[in-house]
Length: 189
Image 1 (cartoon, one colour):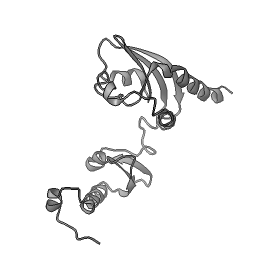
Image 2 (cartoon, one colour):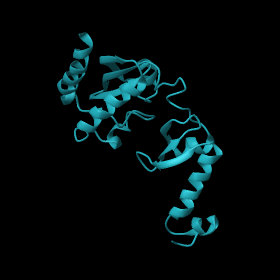
Image 3 (cartoon, one colour):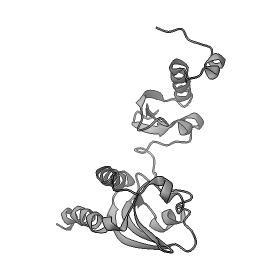
Image 4 (cartoon, one colour):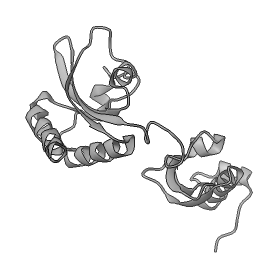
């Protein structure tokens, strides 16, 4: 086992000292009465056991400052009813599709930071009992169609605040509508 370096020496190291980072993350979790369990979906998230006993992924910064809630115990956008929406967005001669979930679609659209000239049409919307359900379906669809998505770099020219990662060319309209229709079918019976 390697020797632990004082935090100051780790900061001067060329690469991140994994031992010190792990210790720091453990201390931040303990300060919030949580327990660090494992890595998360990316380098900015970790899986924690929360004081209530539930487990969930939390952003490192949210854990550091205690700005998180249990998505099972607390009423959040993930536990409240939500919608999975397919939007058609047009700015001048550019147009694309945006697939996302939101409790309030109009509010979410305003959070994209689109140009004032943007024309946004809700093509389809599917209600879910919780944001967690809507998010799971959305994530599955994005995973299946990841190679068809427009690049984040291209979309940041239009989505200056958020929502730039889940956009598709208009040629995906029929495919995405068919998947949403298939999701609606079981609900109709």
